[in-house]
Length: 122
Image (cartoon, one colour):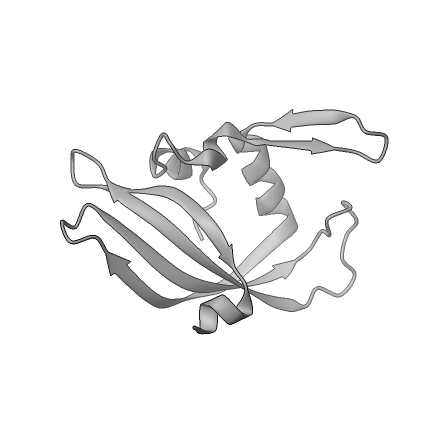
């Protein structure tokens, strides 16, 4: 797995919502805005990627966009509260990535949607 923020930024379409970062709030209601780079750093620290399986793909008639459905196997090292997980268990996350081609023919990530188990099986 390439944990390279610059590579991931270059591979993202400017309209990818993840590039805007995220907003979070703590238990006291203090809000904080995290950049794309900060979000990735947290993900890299919190999760080990064990594997990926491509489940299917489809493309637009003109070949300018595509969707790829896949299953990612991870071990979560840090939980949503920030606590270290004592005995990480494997989890499978099912997602759909939407991609578009740029003017130079490179595929860029437009966004990722989490799929529930029922939608992924359909």
